[in-house]
Amino acid sequence: MKFFKLFTPFKIKDMDVSNRIIMPAMHLNLAKNGFITDKLIDFYVERAKGGAGMLIVGGCYVDVYAKGLPSMIAVDDDKFIPDLQKLTEAVHNARDDVKICCQLYHGGASSKWIYH
Image 1 (tube, rainbow, N blue to C red):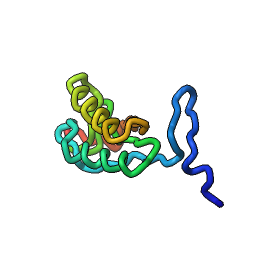
Image 2: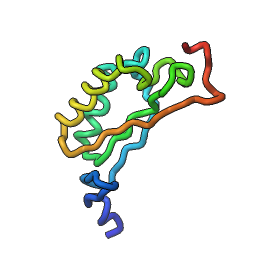
Image 3: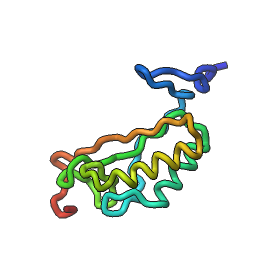
Image 4: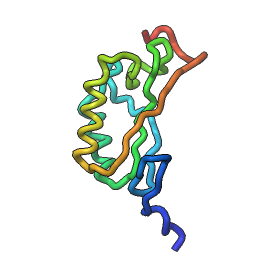
C-alpha cells in the first residue's frame, strides 16, 4: 500500500497532527478589508470536515502596506483578532483534532500602495 502513512498521526515539535493531509494556503478572495467573512469561515469548516490534519490559512498580510490584494486576510492589527478567533473556533467545532495556522504574507516589492 503506497499511502499507508497518509492517515497516520505525526508530531511537529510538541504539536500532534492527526494525519499527514495538509491543506496549503491559498488566496480565496473572501476577506473584506482584512476581516474574515462568514463565507471564508464556511470554506475552512468544510475542509476541516473533509478530514485534513492541518489547514493553512493564507496569505495573511502582516502590514497594510505589504498586502498584495485588497481582499486578503489581515493579521497586522489586534482589531482582526475576534474574527480570527471566530474562524478558529468554527473549525475546531467542526473537528476538534484539526490544526489551523496562517501563512504570513508580505508583498515586498510587488506591494501596491493603491490598495491602502
